[in-house]
Image (cartoon, rainbow, N blue to C red; front, side):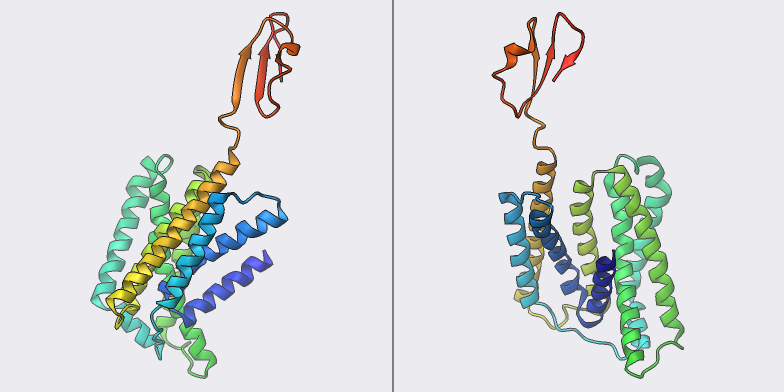
Length: 282
């Protein structure tokens, strides 16, 4: 838990010094570290498909880092507020909140228990607003530590309020998704949706891709797709590892004893229904 908190603090600092289009996709590296440590420390076998997923994540991350845009650091919270109130981002925020309200009020009571996209849609949409709010808060803290106090600006506290509301909503519905659906399904879908919407929100608000060439933007998108593919491969490998014997169950009905099944391979799950006894014998 301590290392998780340290990691989140480091992630928070990363949003201050680097654009979200760089920081968010690199979150997939934590999946690689978890898979490698689990292989050595927990003796969880990393299959060939998992190794391929790790390699894909690393290659995609390198491509993103090489072609990442330069960070433009705002000089005050007021400048960030001007970015947040530009028409394009206001339209995105209004559309996001409208979709979230429809999902919460209409779809969640009726379809939340059988459609994973309802919960994850709410989490991802609110998560995109969370990231831009946290980035604004981080920049305000950075400027304050440099001697340019941002505490007196009401915009600073507005960003804090938005971040608290968004994080609370995001965690609430993410927990509901994890309680209702398989983690192996929730994790990759949530990562893809959250990362995509975060990149879109950051690009609209902070104009991360402004001044970049078309080839650089295309390279970043290709790297992002590669990271997504690697993440899906890793989770597919883990899901297969969780159910390795699902197709190796055999049923036998015999009128003899268990000795008649002595040649059955040990890795099969065998049930014997004997005519002499109603009991099932493994």
